Image (cartoon, rainbow, N blue to C red; front, side, top):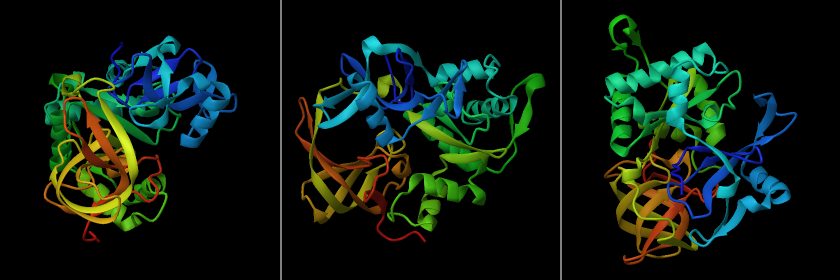
Length: 356
């Protein structure tokens, strides 16, 4: 089985582009989500062909109608999922390889402006945060080469939980400051800025589809994460992907049984994995407020909005799908999953006391 991590892209033999959403995969396919489909009227272009980006509902509908072999029912998660069968894999596109290619100037479709910004971002995390270039990458539409001419944001990837923590801390410490990167004749000064006012409305509309968070609350949470910033007018994310030696178990040794919806109050005891996908928070002192009453030991989120949302020691409110977690050789446990759908309607993790 080929090694595929979260945020890798897969190009299929049917000319479909999928983004991997897992570290562990079944023997016959790669768990991933359809992102781009061929479309003669599409806004994106690659090798003379045009493509369109698809959302959750569109992706499932497209596959049901055109390529049902990419859909299956997962006995592990107890939900219908999508994934690329191994015999349909054309190419695995890795963020770390794409960044190296772009840095060297080997992809002429990437504008010089974006190339320079990616060089500056990777140099910042190398020289200022002390992270080896091999642990840096670029995902999102730039990974498969399907970015628009005007790129709105850069999905920058840092591999390794501790490396990601270093990256966040470096940005938090040195944002809005000139720092020196590079060596010898390539030495130069760069500045990374936090999110500025003109970007907040765009991000809020992109992420929040209900009234779970007001715009003011959303902005407050996002601003303190320092996992998102601006480089010379372009948004960037500092995304976390684990190294494979940080991935435990094998596919299928843990199963998730949905039990219903619950709302709880709890205290965060560990946020180390809160920027991963899924984001994971260890919790204690649980008080049930509504719904299914099981002994919840942790929270998980599949949506970027609630990654890094709360911190160690904070008292929070969470609402989502309760799942029984059954792992070989361990006693069963229970978690609340936030983001069982991409839009996360009615699901959230936030402070008990409003921040604003």
